[in-house]
Length: 347
View (tube, helix red, strand yellow):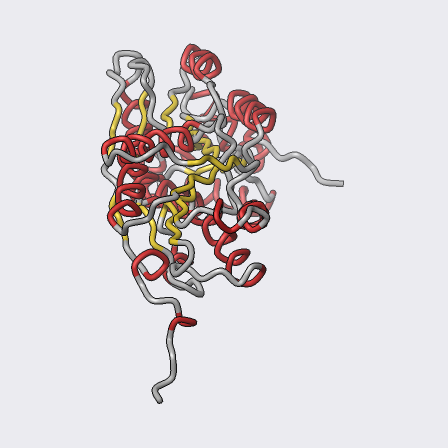
């Protein structure tokens, strides 16, 4: 049976007051070395462990923040979380990470949990519209920052990449290659990031005098969903297949590449040029190195955490900020290179 040891037990064994024990724990410079040694000996003998959570609640200041990501299996969000944790650690703050898995109910459950824990603040890459929940958190003194998601409301802070511009870059690149039948693949379209990237692609094609892209909506942004999307394309008559695809993220693009290359024997980029989004580490090491639109996930995480902690320290008078960074086009063999099967031995 484990005995719960409290400050009173330590004080009794050391022969000092509860206040003296508190000073040893919080302000050791106020206590003489001899008394500190007596209290520390009692702590070690009793196996006393300080209840930091209770102390923080009494002080009204938690040393934890919550982070909710869309998909923890996506290396982009792994890097984003790393950037957030690196900055938090430099401020002696811990990060509690929740994975919504693009599920609105799981997202709501994590928001409930973080509210109950009275975290210092919440970073969230939301599934849908969570403005009502974020307003409620703020009314409880818990600030929030949207990350990897631009907000058009001035009462919330956000840190994001210009996804409309990113979509424009990807589609304009495919147009510049002379591709005529361009398809957008991604989903669900309820995700704001997906819609913004599609809007950018549509704008680029309109500017080029091209018809809007065909849209293949996927149920998720995973490699498995990408393989399923490739199967759907390969079932089309050859004359109806796209000659270029802009996939809404790299995992989806890599799954499509697998399906096109190994299930249908299509050439990338010979038959179909393919570009993704995020520029995760795996993009450069794919069977055919994948072109992508780069957004620096770790930098996004660091900037979002810095903004969140600044808002938490400032209190109710803080003026929300919307930080938007520019994406970068990264061209590799999947759009502009040679397919290895195009190589012919010299004769």
